[in-house]
Length: 347
Image (cartoon, rainbow, N blue to C red; front, side, top):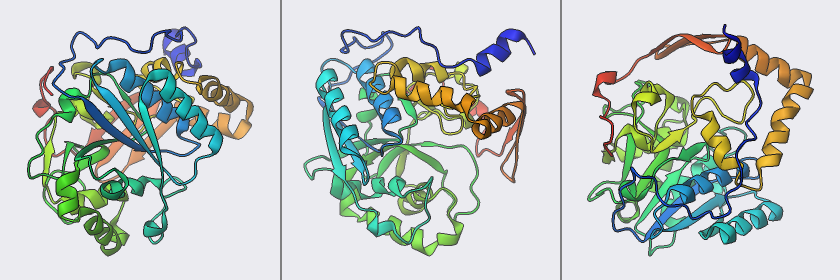
């Protein structure tokens, strides 16, 4: 392996980024602004994911059009006062509106836990958590980074549909439906239709009915409840590793759904973009310190080293082998050929 490739994998996050004095940056040249005033965005976060949520919010603000007003809705059940104060201070510094909404996980107590909690289910209740005056809200996972203006996506026509989503591309035969499976890391909700048809209740009912078949919890529940009543938007609005080489696709929202850039050994081609926006948040030193501590804790260091040296996955729908951070082979059972990916500039 070339020496520069090895250094790129084990080198800690870059420190060359500097905090910008003026956070209200002009939109990128390729952004197209439509007549949008308020853009409502919600995400679910706790103390552990607050740093990544902060990076997400900064990325939105750095790529928004100056005329757009961004309103963030943070869905949380356990978030400390210190974290709340930090996020509110960011809202004053960057000029966005932040609503922190306390949510109880009581409605989901019988559903499987995901990554230690049930916060992932909170988005199911967007119809009652988001103000009734709001007819549309964009949900984003905290492990995404926005790289373009969200105005074109937010203006998607959702007439008669529950949401705008992006196809995941993989086959999920464990669920009883035939429409394309979508990833729920980005969901543009049509709250008006969502409320009228009681989709939240349907999703929870499907979750209990197919409890033993759920693999991705609320994502599976959304796919069951929506029954294909969605608008499929280009892959650029939720770019997953399953979608092929991101060098050939336009970038709108990059989703670190597998390899997390804040973890040692991450070889994602856009990992530096995450650190570029994180460094403009109050959490940069904290995340960087945790990154370094991995080398000081033998168990975590050994685990990270092992994952970098050799990693593999075998299943009916996925097969890949990585050696020294290089993916030697990668097979994915997709519902459509890669040739059908949307052309550059669409979206």
